[in-house]
Image (cartoon, rainbow, N blue to C red):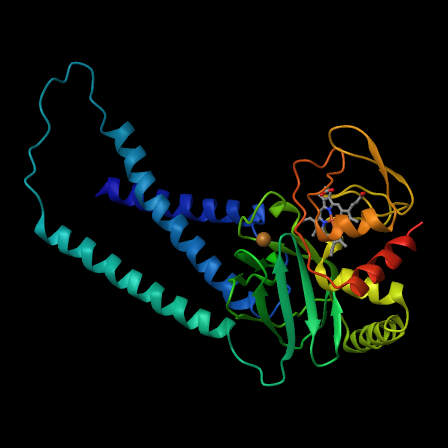
Length: 335
Ligand SMILES: [Cu+2]
């Protein structure tokens, strides 16, 4: 009996200490969405269950190792035990109901994270190797940053242009795959204003998978409306000039995921001061980045490979001559 009391106290103590230890590590980033509530609650419940089970198994084991170890000179055999039917039944029934209970709680929780708000704002998300584009059909704008007003549910309708990707903002907790040929949905209600969040792809999708990120910015309703108005003004202005239309094409096709416009590095060469410059080619020699070379680089990227970028494959694009001319006009403004 004394052993049971000591082990019982030790189990509780180890469980509580393990739980507190895990708690202070801070395994989760800040919760920033309404959907994070039920998920963090469930996470906490599971951590509690896990620390208790951990203590329940490890404490009696270690305790027995020390307290019931063989004494010096003791050569007798241990007591022979045939089995215990009552114990077998008990330790089948109890875990069975625990697992069923967990399944029920999990289903309730999943339903909670998918609760529909009829007022939700639709954002069309396109994922591709290796970037993200966000379309706002209600406002007629396209962006490479996910702007969201705080405390309003966003219904993300997601499509992939190539392989399977997965939309994941750790602070929002929920995660959903993008599957080619299908539209998948995810509902997010941001609750915390901030501009340090990032969408990241959570499904390995090729060489530059690790760079498949896009900024997520959660703002006050007024600031969101100002951003929309600004984007709409830019878009309508842009439609008038070739470089404006080129920028829109670049945004819609996610070129900036691989090409910087300020001289910084990336998966592909920077576009800063590219037009008219001398480009070193893989295998020796150079070429002047005139209109013909830029056009070829966009339509048949593998025709001439820029030195140092042999390992990276740029996808081929199917643009009309006017579209290519618009993109080149945009690239020429980057000097
Ligand atoms: Cu991906």
